[in-house]
Image (cartoon, rainbow, N blue to C red; front, side):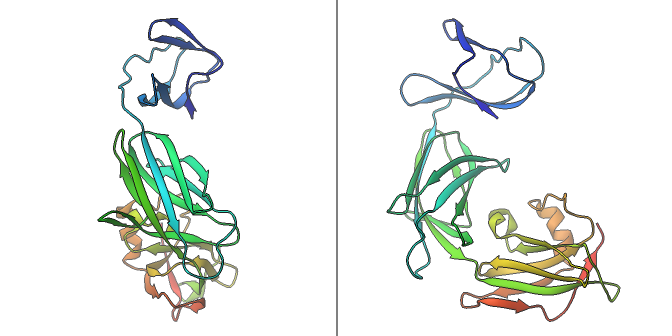
Length: 263
């Protein structure tokens, strides 16, 4: 959650403000000073009535400008939205691209962000980010305090569906979570795909973009944090590897069933 000067806030004295009616919980505190500079960003836990927030450190806000390049296939969609997700996997900014495929995000705290694109009827993943001579594979970047970063965003479209079967001890296994794990998963979070096996053990992973992957099947693992490399390595070691090329479209059938791994 986030709050800034608004209703319920009153100034007690110079530089001291009071807010009321806020339930206990964890908040992102943001206070603005003179001009466009952001003077405070902090995460705080509100636990009691009358709690003081007297250790906020000032820090100028940053800005990000995105220029999105769609794959060269047909007319561009009429509406594309871009979102920024922070390192806590929270969508903290959202904007619609203009007619030139650009969007600007203002007033951002320093930190790591991931770029996500939302297009009606299509699935895209960010293949790479380019800014001058800097090129990043994946969709994440680090924003420094008070900086303006301009990124050219290259996309890959998911046109492949991976189909296969899950087995446990040679028999079809239903209700098992199947995960498509991309290479370098820490920087390709938007390329994960998940499904649950049906009664006959079958599964389908749609909208897969080109890249290298490992397919794993894990028992009772829906609550796992698949962004943790150490956790992924344990299962990927016994998964089924495959590569989806740039020209592959439609259904791809795995030649061997995916063996269920215990949680």
